[in-house]
Image (cartoon, rainbow, N blue to C red; front, side, top):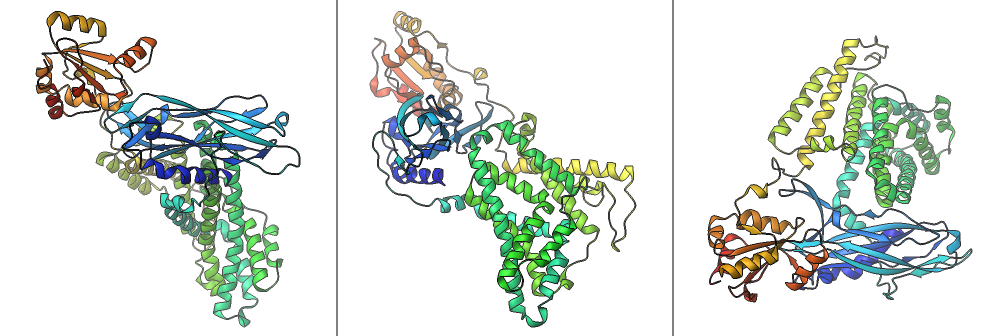
Length: 604
């Protein structure tokens, strides 16, 4: 929560300034770094250095060229930065997906002071790097340095605030819960609630049903329907309390290791529990406690609401291993977020969904519970398929070919749906890998090799189809490939500035100087749409056209940038026949062919 409060303070202080910077030519205002105040920590405790980049409206920065680092210091352990999620979209010029930040980007760096720093006030030097653009202009990379004062508590010391060395005061705090909810929290909680309901119908949970019936049945004669409902509700709230503790614990643990979880290989390792849980759902092994432990639930808490709540707590402990395939997968996801509120809310919703069956049982009678049968095994197969699909989704950032399979379009959707249909027809859900019970409760004969083969192929096809459907929904529109700018018609470019000026003087022609970089999207737009236009190219035949590359700055290129006072890219500079710049014609940013031709009018 300390990190979350720090971010809250940061955005409260700086958020309003972003809307006022769109008109400012000052790049420090268009892309404004702020370092949040925080709290002191004891030796060995994890402190988080939080910084935020406030981005002006209609501007963005490239995620791969935005970074925050803390200068190493003896006695201080520094972890890898954890950054907020960027917006990923297909770039037609790069031929790949490009990650960008819009509005804001938050970076958290974990630091752990060692014993040698006890009682010290340690100035931490931060280096902040970014490179931003607007829709028409890209600016040169910027680097800033800030200093944050970290107070390390002596043994038995009191907490003290540490803030930036500039002395910026703490302007107040506010809750970010509503902001989290706006990012799809309710949909996530609804999915967890539904997952809890489906989990309650798996055979692994069924040992709790007769226990619940016997627990509430002893006093059924003296309880009204309303009281039975309230007792059942309190019982389920006890289960929910237990699961919420698990969720908060998972989120807190994930927050401690947040820098580790930023590693794609570690994130890919999270897929392993999903595979194991799926195997459990398909019958490879069972997750449950001994029946003697389950029966202890009958003797917990006595009568009344207190007894019902205590019984629910124990039921949560008993059911946790049984529901491991679903619960464990949910906890693994929560741990990757480091969000305590999400951890509590998600597990509470899951427990309420799973407890809905027990509320019905406790309120009415065991007669409403459907008999165990083959259909419950089908539910387990569905869970297994979903978890294998989730495993593939996690692995997509580790195994590049998996990410390439996430394709948009009608063809991909049709192929994916066909795979799902054929997989279901083969037996992905209705066949089994192991022997089960028939409708009468008798043990069936083990499935044949043919049935297990059909089941395997069916599961593989359905998982592939579901993954393909996810790809259709989540993948951005993607052209067949990157635009090959070199193949487009373009003016005759000279890449040597001195040689181009000599030629212009010799031929008595005006000069067009295009200053660009490979990382500049607007520069590529200018090449594709403007310079390739036949009317523009015909007019530029009267010019000597010079193209200056600023992709990787060298002393020579920096000298040219200063010579022509280039602030952003693309910059187009016009020189007349005498070699003097026509300052009123200078262009910063992309211009379509029609407007560009107007700039060329009268240049001689």
